[in-house]
Image (cartoon, rainbow, N blue to C red; front, side):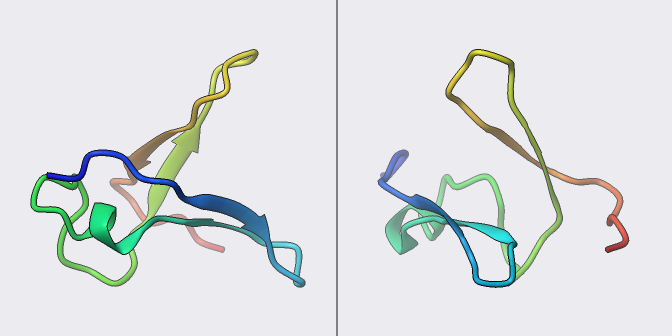
Length: 63
């Protein structure tokens, strides 16, 4: 079971930010997001904390 891995947050040339997750982590049987190439997520953080909370978004957000 892989429940942590080293990823990366980076900024693309078009100004968008992406979070890279290692394949072993994302394909682990216990990984909370299943079965699609792309899903909507809600990302949040608390001031002063160096952690991100990523949850599946229930309703798609229009871009």
